Image (cartoon, rainbow, N blue to C red; front, side, top):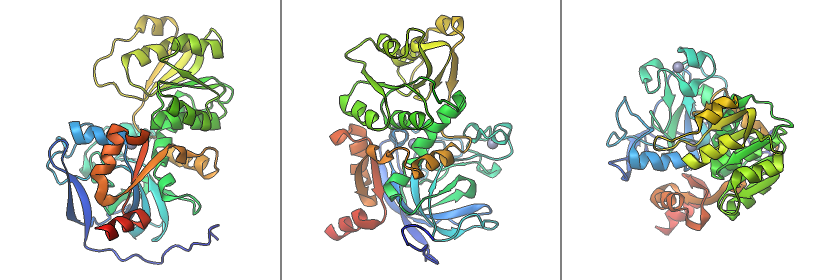
Length: 383
Ligand SMILES: [Zn+2]
Ligand SMILES: [Zn+2]
């Protein structure tokens, strides 16, 4: 029996149309009515209960990239973004018996094509057929419709059951934890007893601290500029924090891990200075994960990289079922991901939610939008 005593709903009535936000031109979001999508073979229809806003959503709304719809910029294509959502299984496509209608689930973003070389290696976030729907590729919120709507279709491979005791809000954070987990997986995975530095206390960086510590890394050092974020990092498992405004970051890290440098660095800031600091604080033969992506070309101290046998890993998204593994850590309460959830809005208030995320109003980190439940209902009543 599920531990909360909540039984899955036996069936959900699926309407023909739904409310959905679509991207107009740059910086233009419109609430509209769309047909509810129909799941195909191997797919599941999800009634979306909550969706978190990601920095990448803000990028897409402004620049279009990294979203691509049929190989073109995503503007004025009736396209719905949003990729960090969870909900309730509402209908099953042909051939699906892995989940049941009424089950609470969360999702990872990328369903690779399943037929290219990288998909076959488990690197489906690097699918060679990215954006080619005819080949079965989906990246909801990037190349196919996503979660700022009442329903979405997901490939069954991208679905992760949510434990009853986990809130909707917490379940939206799993894909972020999965991205952090994927970074550590690509660096070698088993980090117990190894030193790990995380630079940049955004959502991915903060959960990278939590995941690294849960996997036994020690010490785990978080570097950043804002004391409030470093404080959250300490609650999530950072054994040390360095305020880069107050200290020479590389020296401060070496003072903690020893002058040989750190074994692993997860770089989530994405600036040229932070990337060079990451390289210089890594020990010989150590590994750097580049998780934040710079907008422009960056000048990097490559002589130092080569002379010291430092490995650089660019990662994209959350491959190799990392999201499933991150969920297990969260289900086991190895860390409290809800520390990074700061705000909740109703679906119809998405523009205000986006503003909170973009301008970091009240030090917003993860802003969650709910299509259902108390937040959504009381907004409706107020109208
Ligand atoms: Zn995201
Ligand atoms: Zn593929």
